[in-house]
Image (cartoon, rainbow, N blue to C red; front, side, top):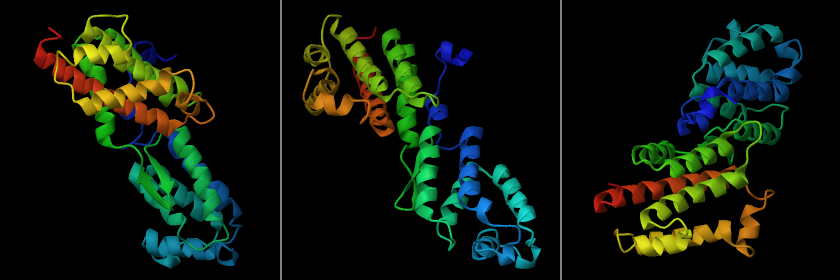
Length: 279
């Protein structure tokens, strides 16, 4: 485990790549381009089934004179590779999305499926959706998570901070993500702050919320919503089984839970501070 991981120094923006692209993600996307397109182009572009693709790239995407493209495929692909690894994160996404729109022998569906696996593996905030690269994570969601961790630290809510950091770490682990337990850690963070505010460590989340709603102005809809979410992770049967089974619990479930719980924690922290419960 890295020093930063041992010390709990982890940022949601780093864990969920939104305005960045680390080496693993960039390498994975280049491998997709190579495997599905460039490795099948042959030695000479003008006698290849991929001639239309390269001409289209040169003319419409790169906007370069066609007579500057080397007919030897190896040279041309090396040049594109050099650009690929120099591009900004969003230029890479522009390129791989554009590839899927060009006529070629490659089936774009297979390329898109491979890319989405890379994007999920490396915690990109984007996916191919209906042939378009679209965000699945926003900057606002990332800020909610980081704010909840920072607010917990500033308010001496050690247990809350620990649960959120564990949830984020389990969600962002590229080698072995644990979505099921990330969800549990997220809701445990809400349970932890609720117990602190209710002044009773034996309370469940439901009973803790019942007690603290008399101390702070807790919106009934939020109270009801989180009691129902808590049921997903605490019930011994019914809907809990469907959500918490490892085979059906994925990145989107865990991401939704940590964002929602972080937002609720931020809400409770502000309300409790105004009511003097954190002094």
